[in-house]
Length: 236
Length: 236
Image 1: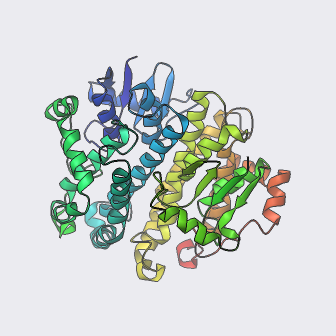
Image 2: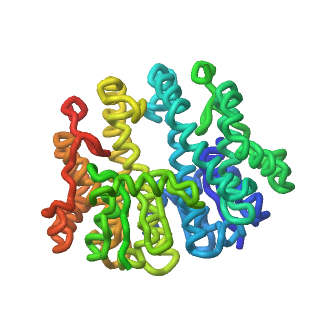
């Protein structure tokens, strides 16, 4: 099966959680919108009047005739197929539950720099962004990452789910990567509270396929257009 | 199977999407935290050190030995069991994809009155709330509800998914209810743009089990502690 991933070509964003899963599994896939004319193809699919099941937004995945959207839903679909999720129903629901909690955290992180609207520039919501960022690091980041640290430790410390790597581990790797980029000072102080997650991050970074991916041009660099953005004032 | 639902006993909140599904199906369930001592029981489960798969937050559902959290995940699990979702994989993923888009909309609606932090009072973030609400009604509500209206019309106008009622229809009923409560003036002006969803809302409200539920004490009244809150200034 050759998968077709559709996501914005200039950011890691939510698509990155899917890219990491496809890369780790060595799956045959095309990152369509990064190819010539790919963005137009992506927009055509979103706006296709004949499609009875249109995606609300990227990322979405085509697998044969199936079109699946919503990041966590794509991973729910791919998980067992890529050997990155348990096969039993209870295990699949548990991995998905954790991924939906990652999804919630991603919104919290995004909204630190855009608490009023994504349709406005950061500069138009700077003071609200500073307040939201402070609140996020006081209450939300510790609660979410403390929870994942606890889940990891209860499961033996090596993986979040079951006895081998799952897409949830890859997603937590990406959360750590992103927070380090957007909030280098805050994250440096915070990391001692989540030693298990940091060790997990480091193990994931060393996995042969992930390591090769991160060094390749397929990995888009962090920048000021994605979920994670570095604004010096917000890291203060 | 007797289901045990755990959710805050004083608000509709995210738990209401699950309650509506259980009620429409005539399922055997207990709304645990609304019973005497139920909140303590709920907190004990969340904080139980021996539980290898703890929920991050309510709502969560116990079904025998299984504990499922995250609203959309609970509905993913319950859907086929309550005859409120397609049985084939593609259909289940599609219904879930729509539910995850409802989840995203719920965050947008909640954050109108709490754009900075849920740990602060509304009064401490009033001006940011006004700006976020204006932006939400300019960009987000039209985009989300316009999308669901389009999906509904493409599917024949009666149901959002397939040929009979699903939990997604119940969730859209709840979205309309909540927006009418929180933003009566704005919603009144907006409803002409989503005639199909309004008609769907009215049909759901008349279904015998839903009608009986809405008239019962099991339905918690809207109030100023939930996702949907009425602040006159935000409805201006």
